[in-house]
Image (cartoon, rainbow, N blue to C red; front, top):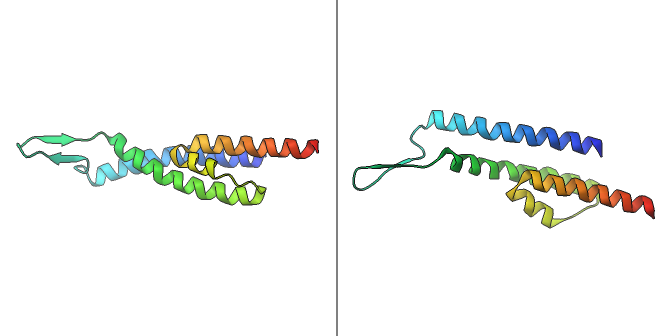
Length: 110
């Protein structure tokens, strides 16, 4: 269990840092990516948080694959946890670890 906690805590931190680094690199390479010109001659600029959120969803998909692999090892298949992971990696990992702990406690009681 501690191996899973270490693995996913490192992955969560790396994923968050990677999100901001990738967003920064993309905005350095394409500085006008989030800027559009309006018909009346003005400009409209979106926040960089749109880009950060998009990258987070892509990283969350990677977390889904990691969780799916570990769910197969633990014989725990919960599609709800995978759906939660798509929207928030932290929430999905937290519920996965709690479900594994609950499964192991119930297994020891029997």
